[in-house]
Amino acid sequence: MSELSRKIEALLFISSSPVTERELREALGVSLREIRSALEELQMILDGENHGVFLRTLAGGYIIETKPELSDIAGRFRDNAGKNRVRLSKAAIETAAVIAKRQPVTRTEIDDIRGVNSSSPLAKLLELGLVKTAGRKKEGRPSLLYVTTAKFLETFGIDDINDIPDLDEIDTEEEST
Image (cartoon, rainbow, N blue to C red; front, top):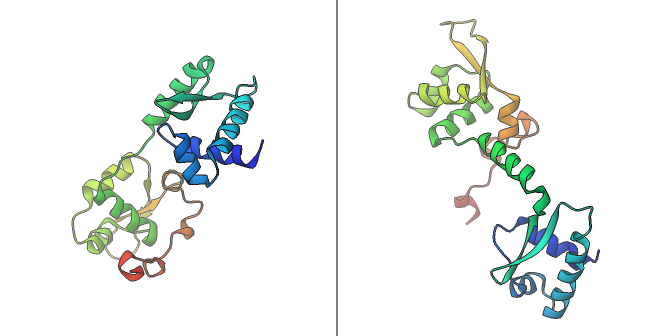
């Protein structure tokens, strides 16, 4: 496969809507003739038996779609994968961030850092399996301690909890302008 066909395949793969030849030309900086030739090559390759997708023209552009004979399994997978998506409120995200950086941490400590009651977002994080209890605090009032789970790492795309940068390591918009 030519380098241009590979690039077009990557662009079509990430696009959620049809991509026109003109858009491909502008993105890749090559002629329409080269775009058309690379699209033909890509179509021939994907039309082979060993691929689960094909190149389709739609609404004046091109998309990569699942081959019809695989649409049932792809649909079932998509439906099941959608059930595992996690939607969190701003409060839950803040609470998760505090737990991730300060773990093990008590609810009172979370409340103190956030400045508001964190019972509801904490309950949601527990329900979703993003955090769990990890015993009780020994000193002072014996409060429950909270830590993140492997599902937390997976959900937020983190390999290791130590990969989360400290706030002072993050370039903010205000600093970069």
